[in-house]
Image (cartoon, rainbow over all chains, first blue to last red):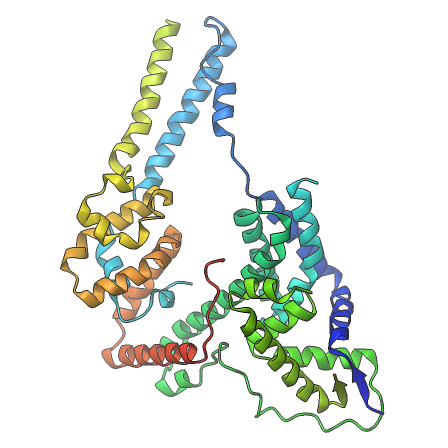
Amino acid sequence: MKTRLQTRDIGAMLDRSAAQLDNDTLDKLRNARRVALQHQRQQVPVLAWLHEHGLAHTPGHKSHHWGLAALFAIILFSGIFYWQHVYEHDHSDIDIAILTDDLPVDMYVD
Amino acid sequence: MSTREQLSDFLADVERRAYKHAMFAVRDEHAALDIVQDAMLKLAERYGDKPAEEYPMLFHRILQNTILDYFRRQKVRTFWQSLFSSYTPQHAEEEFDPLDVLEDKDNPSQPPQPDTALNQSQVLAAIEDGLHRLPARQREAFLLRYWEQLDTAEAAAAMGCSEGSVKTHCSRATHALAAMLKEKGIDLS
Amino acid sequence: MHALSRHLCYMLLLAVFCLPLAAQAQPWEKLTPLQREALAPLSSTWDTLPEKQKANFLGIARHYPKLNAQQRQRLYSRMETWSKLTPEQRQRAREKYKAFSKVPHEKREAVKKMVRVQQERSAASGVQAADTVR
């Protein structure tokens, strides 16, 4: 007696197989899901933050000075950070070679 | 329901199957996990704001492309490794190209089973082995239609091809699977 | 006193942001016609590129006039891929390219031949990666 199988039953069999995955794998998948959800596409309200902690407080307040100094420091360091990361040494000679060479770019990309 | 909940539900539903999809293609647990992780992240980051009905199509397309990227990186890695060891052009010609149609002629099939019915786990093993051996596009079409339950239009969108191509890949897959299963005493209809 | 410190803050803020902006801010409309020709494949995505990428491509664009037709065609077809790499990936690609150029000529040619054969095989089997959604 041969075993008979319908194509439409294959899905159910594979479901059973998927249900048998070990806990370690399931944990990792759950984790991957969590990480993905954390990065779900959203707007970033940077400007709102700036307004909230911004430059509109009444002068003379001590905490206002600290707030301003903190903001000042943050802006300064962000600026330095930004500036350092914007500038990349000029590699145009080798880049042009790669982009016009016989081999496709994919070969050099990991 | 918020989009975050919708995405969460979708991922929770698809994650195990996605892992199996990746395993059928790459046969490496660690790589398969990386691929699924990567695909989930890309879906969330780039298309997390799309309507939930589009998630299946988008996700499977991303998943297949991530698998292709994996194979390409593997090839490049092998290329660089072999370049700086004893490399000869002959080895390069034999290099495995996963995009080739895989016809497993060299792999001797098991002798036909005697006339006893197989138990469930044996049948499952035979199915999974068959799926491993299918060419990538055929497997993709087959799984999207028969496991993910996408209709031909959705499968076509996921695979980036026409509905006609999906049907062709699917029928070829079914025929190939039927032939492989027949060798193990299973009658696929 | 308070007004002064606030003004100083504003000025510094302005200065700090102006420095990188002055050096790099190059929206598509501000590029010269030659730059725009060199970077034509990126015309629609240019404004979304990070500053570093823009700087990198402007350097590449400088070489454009010296290229022949085949080189320009290759440049165009590879530009989008290049634009999607991270700085680290670009750096590693440069290192690999340098390593490869040190390999003896016959080996290099053999490798190139192998890659061409693989590409022809992929094209012949009719597989197209759905690469608009990645």
